[in-house]
Amino acid sequence: MGITLTAKARRALATHLQQIRMAESIQVDGYCDGKKINNAKDAAVVRASVVMDELVRLGVPANRLRPHHHTNRAENAVVLTFVPMP
Image (cartoon, rainbow, N blue to C red; front, top):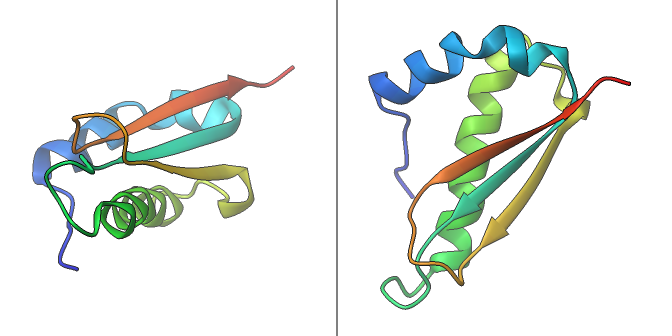
């Protein structure tokens, strides 16, 4: 499955990198519209994985990333949710 980050998405991650690095954990939710794509689960998993790979490349520890996938919303995207450090 050929899912890659756009230059705009890479810039957005880099822009928020300090906030991302300060989080205790980062939930990475991959979305794909299950009503429009047959292999929506696979696509949602790959979307989350691609973003996680980029975050690790930028220096975010992999053990702080929490992947999730969703196929029940009419979205094709990835959403990050930050859990702040105590």
